[in-house]
Image (tube, rainbow, N blue to C red; front, top):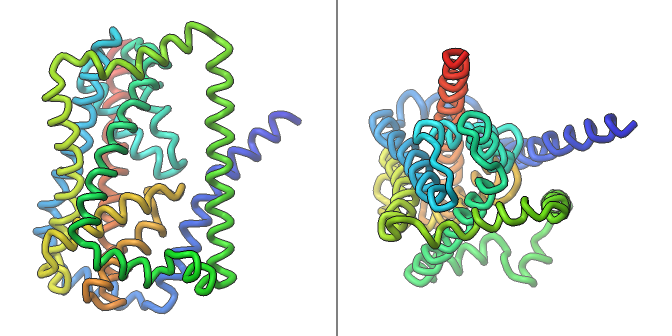
Length: 331
């Protein structure tokens, strides 16, 4: 009976994010025909710029692996850079199936292939996320201050105020909000249970603490911050260069791309696979505010998100094969 309940919970954890993403995507693209998508891919899109953007997506993940290895060193863990890189690639790819599972998975990979302390690795991951959150909040503040009129327009258009939110919400809007709230509550419960489990073992808590505080003892703090900034610069270029793939976004400029990037970064916090649906809606709204047509903006976010997600999946497959071959060789 207990096993059946666990299986049901796992099924819900996988099915709900996919259902939410599918619902948002269906709502956004219900009036757009496939002919428009085919025409955009075959005639209106510059594949050269799309290909030029892809290395920056890879670079962001590689820099994340390099930074992670640097943070692990003060905690007494010195895994190979190649293992850290494969762990990062697989963590992003696995999150396409089960949102947020990647952070735990990459710690498990280091434990399996390098003998690293799992809980210590998890502590460093939490530290990294805190640093990334601070950086994106700082970037968001700077972007907001330079683009206040655009954000105010965005808030008015999306109803992000108490009066606007209540007046504009349809039954579908309330349903989506309720589902997002439920998913957030489930995440909080799961995290709290994990930490209650950790607290039962003193050594585990100590390992977690060592991982959390390891960033204070990195060998080169300047290099650490350069890696951190480099990660987000690479993510931005990975997104911004796709603007030049289409005539209707090529002339918007870097500030418009930065606003869309910041808004999209917060949108992916909604627990759907790679932010599917929520990212599409948020970035499309920003593009429309900058004068892009509704259909063109919808096609842009669909094409860019799909191709970038495909890159993440391919990197995950490559790392799976590489690690499988390493295990086979070790035998």
